[in-house]
Image (cartoon, rainbow, N blue to C red; front, side, top):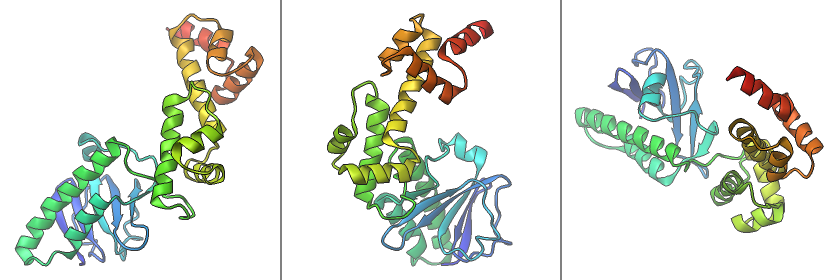
Amino acid sequence: MAGFVEVSPEMTLLLGGAALAEAPLPPNPTLLLFNAEGACPTLAFDGDPDFVGLARDERLMLVIDRAAFARVGGSEPHADVCHLPSALRTITLAIRDSELSVETLKVYRLGKSIELLCETIRLMQTDDLVPVASDGALSLDDTRRIVAAKRMIEERWAEKLTLEKIARACGLNRAKLTRGFRDMFHATIAEALAEQRLKQARQMLLTTDKPVSSIGYENGYLNSASFARAFGRRFGVSPSDFRTGQMAAA
């Protein structure tokens, strides 16, 4: 399947083993690598690609100018490697395995490359790209459940969420949720909850005139001292000094 297709001056499709010296590449590229094979097909993102190291790579690749990627709606991914959704795998295999003739094949792959890019961006925007756990031990279904746990924390942080409640809501046992969450997001459930609450507290310090103690309490801290310690560890300044500094800068 080796070869390349110049989709536009801003994007090139590379198929495994392409002669990189001959392929026209954008000057400031980011790279999307599609691996449709194996028990765990993946989509990998490389924001600083080493094309020498990729010279013999057998994955299908989209090389796209960074500014063009951002212009059409692409953004920095939450993870470097994600599970390859079935929709993207289908397009990847269609590009790779098509048996059309030479000129028709080029046009077909050009169109399919645009479709692959657009569908990838759509899934990024809807937060439907699921990170692969670093040890690969989690199934796609379990990974989706852990992503759901993170979304639950981000959306329902103000509730009295416990590990047991989150695990039950997402259909995982506590041990698998704990291990998987740390592996995927490099934080514990408690740390993720604290992050959401401290972000909200910071916003309230900026946009309300509520007392610092009230803001801390509303965000789950039972006393001002514990709130001040947590806020200081996260933002490097006490809540009171943060508010004072922001008011002085306004």
